[in-house]
Image 1: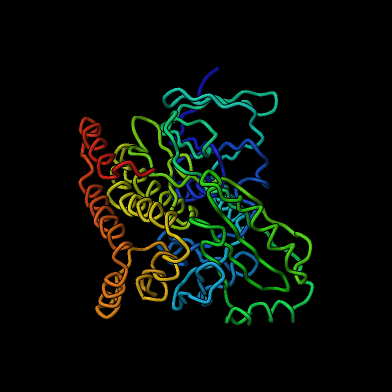
Image 2: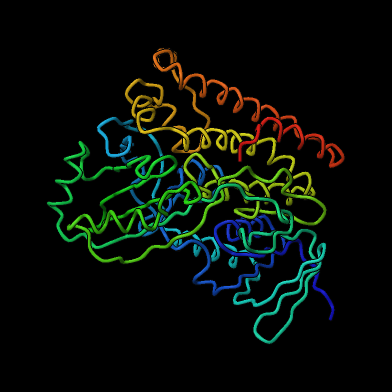
Length: 430
């Protein structure tokens, strides 16, 4: 069986794979995409928060009506059920319908000439040689680059048996709104207008959230936690909340999935193989969102390959530009999941968790607090010496990890030593 020569084969056409297919095909690369499900069912089936700046950076149009909504709506982040809170305004986070975004990306890929195949029952990869069984026919390609966008349980081309770290069990649903007045009264009881976002943090202890919005005559609920730490799953948190509130009706749509919260792979591209998305650990683990990071990585991949760079050169660029911040957020997440209820409340009420920090985390950027916010945070920590003793070393670790990624080795021979140094900087954090 002869092999067709192509620039890249992408295995997995969820958000990461669909974005890579669209952006690479747009730049004139010969792209084949393979998906185990039907193309109409690929990717996440829920609503996810994606910063608007990510779409602009990637050269993608911002989601329009039917795909995106609630951009910039004030976000009320309460310590458990409140009243302590941080209110985030002036942000550009959009609530994006993931099925619609994925289909937009797939349509874009096909318009630019990508060949997309679905319902593949078997895929074999050896170097750049790919064989896929689609129906009763086997096709074969010889690719310059093979992209593993197949998730945690997929090909594991570069991940192998590496531990993905703690797993967040997240769920999101849209449900019927049975009583708008009762819903508004619930929001008002927590000091939040009904057209804004209400987020209970640490709702089940440690790293857990319950996020509630009202729009379009529906209730949107997002919940997540780390069950391995003894907490109920996001789905259980969501269902328990919906059962408590008589103004919330039946589920209309949504989904659930497991999100890796550990560090991204120390190498996401080498030889003829690249890992994207969950397969590479591309998650902003402070709040468990990966969609924005997947789009950014797909854009950088398309840019790198279209400029004639290798998988390793793409990897090096991504590690230096993006991975350091993701590793810093792993350290921050480890701290946040250890916070007691009293510590979380104190951080919000004292100004340690100020609006700049909260806003930057929400939209997946490095925080740049004002001088007054920095002084307030230092003064707040001074009143909490036990927390400061834990938090200050974490902040130093975060900066060290970002700096270490800026020094990512130029050649693969330097990777083993660099990776040992990164493990040492994490200091046992997973």
